[in-house]
Image 1: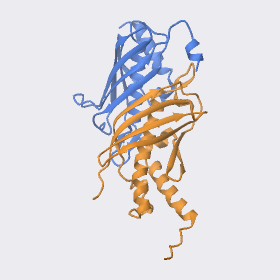
Image 2: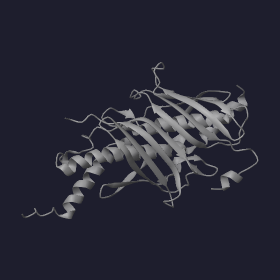
Image 3: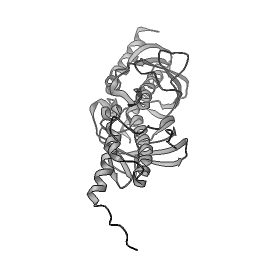
Image 4: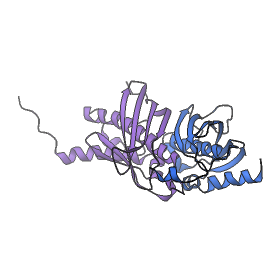
Amino acid sequence: MKRPRPEPVQVVKQRRDGALRALVSGVPYIQYLGISFDRRGDELTAVLPYRDDLIGNPLLPALHGGATAAFLETTAIIELAWSLLWEEMEEGALDPTTVLPTHLPRLPKTIDFTVDYLRSGLPRDAYARARINRSGRRYASVHVEAWQDNRARLFAQATGHFLMPERDA
Amino acid sequence: MTEAKAKIARQFVEAIPHARALGMRIDDIGEGRCLLSMDYDLRFVGDPATGVIHGGAVFALLDTACGAAVMLHPAAPAGTATLDLRVDYMRPATPGQRILAEAVCYNMTRTVAFIRANARDEDAGRPVATATGAFTIESARGPERAARR
């Protein structure tokens, strides 16, 4: 039995990156904070480029706890939305060209979000990755880790629960 | 509330670049208590389908109100930082409406302040979010803690 020829790599990449870009660019607050997402396969890393107006303590200086929390919550929501999108995209159930900033898949809603501030956020770029610990039909539990210069030295971590968007049966 | 306290609160919030960027304003203060508010802004929308403000913006408002409440405690700490903060999102904030966050520092030890807070929009009877958390207390003696990372 002959396997079908795999798709050219650039076609696959273009499709996945396009879907991710549409998802992220559609949310004004993500654009306002300047958050972007690096993708390696299905793994996402969120990047928060440093900006002076993210500072919460000008004396240290340190990032605002609210900016850090928003960064982590955004990372969790995009990870969840992306995991749904990825599944549908890989199954061929979703045409990624229909993922436009004006026609986004419904986003998960935050039920609760708890942030641990482990050390002060430095005036530098920050990175975060989310891990979905449990994703059911209705609820999901997500853990997020954020670091700056050193991957092993987290400056914040968070855990949250989310209400998943209704899926078309 | 003394004029001095009001000045502390105003300076605390005005000196925070991120609070200024989000347009936060002090509406009322008390002993270990602070009421902050933030205008609805299209840049802060988290769900483009509904126009609802992103949870992160509400979190930032609550966090700032909590920090200000710690600073306004009669024990008068020299500084504070968030140790942890949990926010429960009760309902989406109504698009177009101003959001208010009220924080109370209900207990303070030598080293830790405990706070509770809630956020609401014009429908004051139904909270948008509640928060609970712990904050550090920086003593007036100096920046040794801040310097140590």
